[in-house]
Length: 238
Picture 1 (tube, rainbow, N blue to C red):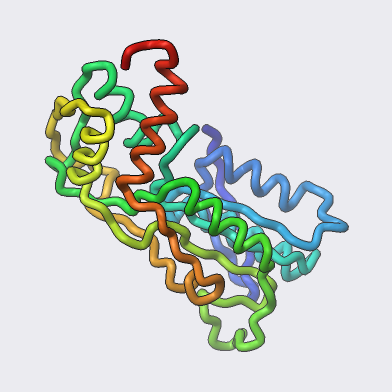
Picture 2: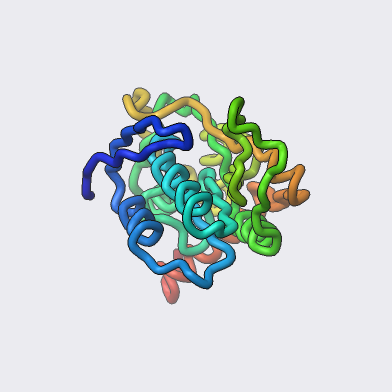
């Protein structure tokens, strides 16, 4: 992980400082400020991080679009994506691995948590909708009274997720049923850096693209476990 301070000026000349602690953001900014964007007409990026980490990306991209290239840019913020080839550090992969290998799973806040578990197919559907409809300039933007949800540049950011938080214990129970094994649970206190509930407010994505995720938790988990067993335990009895 790299760390440095990013300082940029907003549209009214004020200086804004950000702490950038994510190598992905550094690479993103390198593309924006160091790359040759001539000839591009549409720029698309996504992130599955907390709001403070994504802010430098958004500020940097809007500066480039507005002041230099006028490239249509859309950002998507993912919420708890799961499915085949998912991130190995996320709960679905960690839980499946532990259950299938007879290890206890860590259940933080004693299970009193919820997340917007979103199957990968629904995420892909949203990405396709956005790619097919590049962002446009919002004529209602008022520089004297700026609204952070719109922009004078062809620039939009959307949350993309299931828009329906699922209790952690319900998620674990669905995994258990699909695998056919009851999980050994190690109930633990809340982590200091964690939050009780997160979910995607997808109202803008619904309004602009009629986005409607339709993969149920049961179907998504069934497909995920089918892939997991085939990928990690092909030829075994698990």
